[in-house]
Image (cartoon, rainbow, N blue to C red; front, top):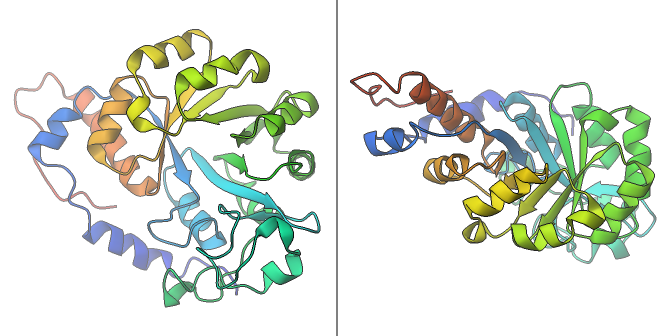
Length: 290
């Protein structure tokens, strides 16, 4: 199918009409928020099927600072944008991505499960995703899900000449070591259950960013320690304004979200609160719209 922006305004209207996020309690809690960056997790999966071109297009329209997506390697060595190792959850196919040729994957529908609007959406190649994203100023986080994929990924990144805006992410240590060896100038993000677990590997991998997967394990002292080592912290998945407030207050640098539009509004209001924090009367409640 041809990907245009024809459906985006409808979805922005939907988003606008379904979000009433700032009561007095919420907005007061955001008064002393820190400044954070926003990472669009698999595009905007609240509004379009994850890890597809429509989802990445929506992320481009948002105020996200980063656009994140996942990459697997197929049986014949192609690099495809999909999160799960299995096809079952997000396509009409079955089987394991790494055990199947790209010719089979290309025929699958990766959008029908989300809504009829996206029926016929295919699993994109890494090359297609970067062709879409590379002309824009947003940074790109490529989460590597397959072993023995990093070298080819780096080749594609080099082809587009975007080494300065790409971050190679993974929980697979060997893939991050390949990235360090072959392209040390490209930033690396280590995904780990907790910050202390990641810091144990820091000397080996030398990550620029650490992304703990257990939000309940994140403590301010661990963030401070990572900052002392020159490492930034990316917390996800944050889809709630209060969680965004809490994690930004304790020093998180990046918040990863399924709805970058919502977090952009949270950030904007937080900055307004900081600007007007000495005012006697807080800013009035309203329905904030895009």
